[in-house]
Image (cartoon, rainbow, N blue to C red; front, side, top):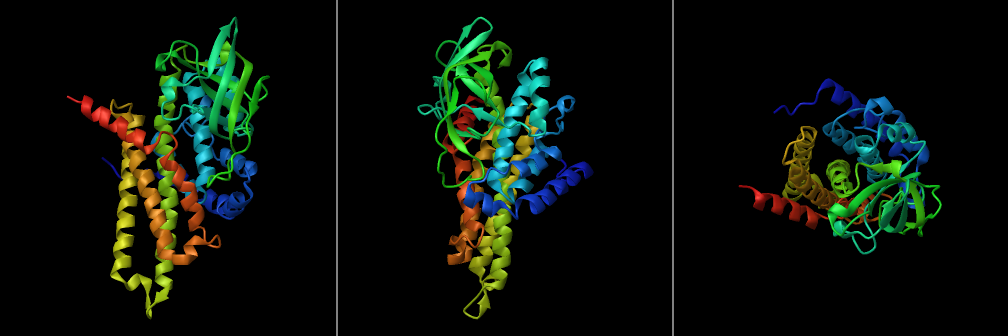
Length: 380
């Protein structure tokens, strides 16, 4: 075990930190308040290689590891968790195309995703099937060289703004083995979008339903074989869970640093808040949970990079711990700010709103517990 970063990792971590500081942090509050999808900033991130962090380099990807991605997402989310999380979703969709798409599909689609000339979304959740994704109902009936797609996806990040939608749909019998994955361009006839959702957080990325009404999709846009879609979706989510855990770590780290600085300056009862043991203990607990979260995420990323047989379990437990701890840390940072933490003049409340959803998406933390428990109980 080597807990030190390589020189290369330190270099791109520093690039991500500088980009977050200069291009994201000054604008994050305005993006949140105005529900702005920051296309220009996203394309600047893509120019640094952040649109295809673990996509192969023959189509313009960076070819880095899942551990490298965790380092990058922690830095980006320290400035704006909402925007960093959209970049994570784009990366997840792009990786699925890179890993499971045919060579012609890869070369046709991925170069524009790598520059973020085009944006991508991941479409699994449905109005009636969130955690119960294996029973999704969106159908794709094969007719010659096309599939005819009907159904609806819910809560899709980038819905209406993204140019490509990686869609899990039913091509066979009920259950997970009847699911396939199709890549659907935005201009496909029969594809439409619901209203833009008004959300608690994640306001720098639009969220909307994605609706299919006899939408024809070429067979060549399928990822993998028929019936492999659920497995592909779950493999995508292993990495997505690490990324969203890293986003929680970045947001929590930023809030811990703000709280530390605040309690040094804020005086009550003729003393800085930092002089009170209760404050010191709170900061110590926050720092401990942050470090534990980072270690779990990095360990799970290393296992995913190594294709370890227990990688899925570790991705689930790391995501559960890091997103729960991240929200707690931000909440404690708000508490240390008192009333100032609750007003928008201070950024703590934005981080709180943004990190809350991390405990729900990429598989709820209740589902993460189910995955871990099932793996544990199946061990010899």
